[in-house]
Structure formats: C-alpha cells, structure tokens
Length: 124
Figure 1 (cartoon, rainbow, N blue to C red):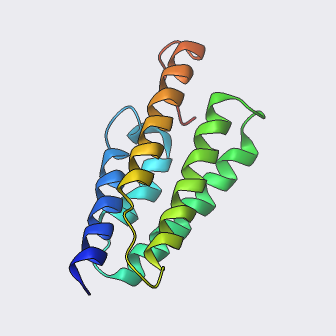
Figure 2: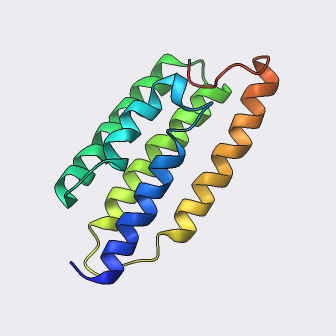
C-alpha cells in the first residue's frame, strides 16, 4: 500500500475516532464508527464503513423527516459511502476536504440538535 493510500486511511480513521467522543458516543452511531477507527486491514475498514452506512440508514428511517437526528444520520450515511468510494478509487484522492466538510456539517447539526433537544446527546 502506498503512502497516499495510507494517508487516506488515516484521515478516515481520524474522523471515525472523533465520532467516539462525547456527546457522540452515547448515541449508537459511535459504536458503528468504532469498527472503522479500529480496522487493521483495508478490508476491515471497508466492511466497517458499510456497517456505518447501514446503521445510519436505519437511524435515518427511524427519525422524523428532516429533524436534526434525520439530518445527522443522513450525513453519516453519506460520509461512510463517500469514504468507501474514495478509498476504492484507482488513484489516491485527497480525502481531507471531504473529512473537513463532513466534520463541519456534523458540528452544525450537533448545535442544531442541542438547541432543539435541551442539550441532550444527538443520536437517540
């Protein structure tokens, strides 16, 4: 595996590690992203991202449409699918911009969820 591919993997795993911190950890999505953060092989990483996308899709279906929890689940599902696609690309791609964009989106959604739910953890 070349250095660029390894840096892509590190960026995705760093994003996953951020999701393990509170207030995110208490919600369920963090448990799925833990698989990504702890993946030791490329195959485990892709499998973990698939698990994250599936979990987030289920959470989105269970959330009221367009609510903060629906938007958060949608963002996490899209992030997992995007990262998996980028990691499988034939040539290494800078995933840093994607990580930055998803991180900013989640921060904004967290703030929206805190205002709407009296500072409760977002993934209920």
